[in-house]
Length: 333
Image 1 (tube, one colour):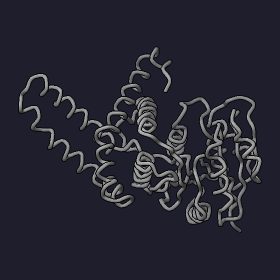
Image 2 (image 1 turned 120 degrees about the vertical axis):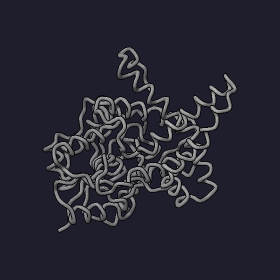
Image 3 (image 1 turned 45 degrees about the horizontal axis):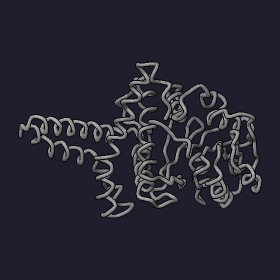
Image 4 (image 1 turned 90 degrees about the vertical axis):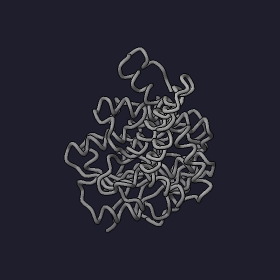
């Protein structure tokens, strides 16, 4: 008998993507599942779209946040396995089959994850960059990942109830990281199956990509300071990314000092630092090339080292300010 899977999707003003999301779910080759969509008090027409599909719709009577939406979905589910994904993610036809198979081969004390396809639904440069970066970062340690992300998270329903679900009194994002760390501290295992994939709809522009980097870096830093793992190699908050940011900041300081004082010895280390950064990020560069070729890799490398790194640095600085200066916590991103 195959496992019954409850797919839980939180929705907030997701009219631009929820139809594609549900069409992909109901195109699955795996038949034994239910779909629960929890609408977090949307103000667009996404509820009307959801009603066109044979899923269980739960509407919250006030904005409550994504963690509560997921928890309510779990409370109203019937599945042996809970599969969490997002309203802007498209399951592949084999995603649920791979989830069920991975569970049957594993153990009930595991939380199983997937990730984004290298190439997203929308093909802008910034969306492709982000999807490859996340795919690489989340799959490089499949047997012992630091976290499982909720764009493709599968967990035994009994275990999810036992652990208490997602924290509802937490940051606006990273609730999946907090849950993963809580599970690991309780002795449960995390396992990443890189073949469990969903295709994400980013619709990123340059501004959207940089804003995303700043916002996520800010909350990652805030959480990591409190969790005392600021320098950990943790998925998209990878050691490679942290070295990339540090390298570019050092180069920027040296360049400014050279401009101010015109001392040639200040610029001698620049190419060495840049070469060291490329060496550390060599596997990510190979991932860019494997997914989208030489020209894209060159452009992605320029963006990653010069612009993305600075956005992450700005976000990290904001996170430090939010942690140590309470008044700054009123600033929203």
